[in-house]
Length: 52
Image 1: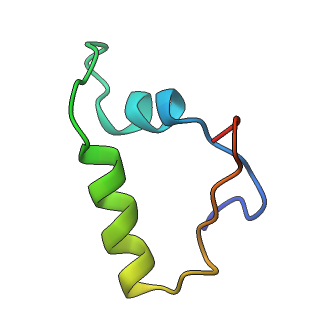
Image 2 (image 1 turned 135 degrees about the horizontal axis):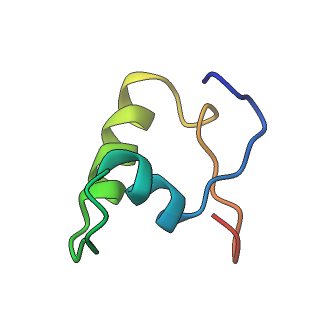
């Protein structure tokens, strides 16, 4: 929401959420995005296949 149009990969999103630098092996990012889409709208967050 701060940078509209910016594309973040899953790895970038995980790095921003989990700042301690360890790999995360869960679907936490997908769950967070699901709830954000539910609250905002489906048009607020879009997937770009192969990028993010």
